[in-house]
Amino acid sequence: MKPNYPLLSGSSANELDLLMEESGRSAHASVGAELEELQRVLANRWCSAHWRAQQLTEIAYRRLYGIAASLLGFSSGTPTLGPTALVSEGYAKMFCAGQFKEIRDPGHFYARFTLSMKHIIIDYFRSKQTEKQGRNWRRQDWIEHLEASVDPMFAELDLLDALAMLAERHPNCAVAFELQFFGRLTVTEIMHSTGHNRSQVEADLRFAKAFLRVQFAAQSS
Image 1 (cartoon, rainbow, N blue to C red):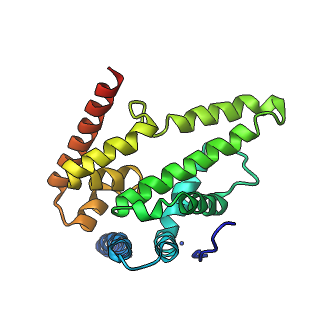
Image 2: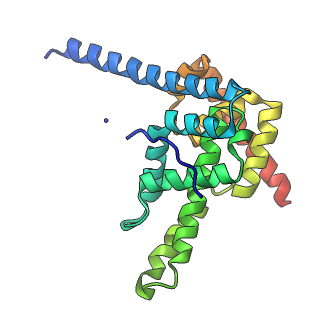
């Protein structure tokens, strides 16, 4: 039985500049508040697994919905699998596998949830391969696109192991990479959420990508 959980159901040149600046600050503040709420839930070691899963998913629902819509965007027709259903299925998959209790930080949460949803999409289209033979080519193209969408150099199963190693040795770099790559945060948003300046965030991202590539190169040799 799938667990039940709550879902959250969008002048003058100087004045325009001020309005855009204020809008940017509000957006960054919203992202920062979201990450702070996620971290608060993760820091609560006395809560039940069900409560933790509910809270994390509800807080991050809007961002998860956007990620789901992006993953589904490669296809022009998924009548029974929309973003809402994909988030729900991703939640159920993670909950049943006990993955919520393994989450170490907000970036790791986005990483696990994104990969969970991607697996669901791939399984969904593979299950449809025998239906409507004339459309199989497009489904197969989409499956191959999703399987390669993490990064051409990043094998998905190895990615989580490599990220765990990176988090153990260089936690700031792992957090920055996961927030950008899976949480879809910009460098500026990562700056506001971590309190680090732009040069440090950019350096962390460069190091993280180099570290992961070295790990995968070593594994494939």
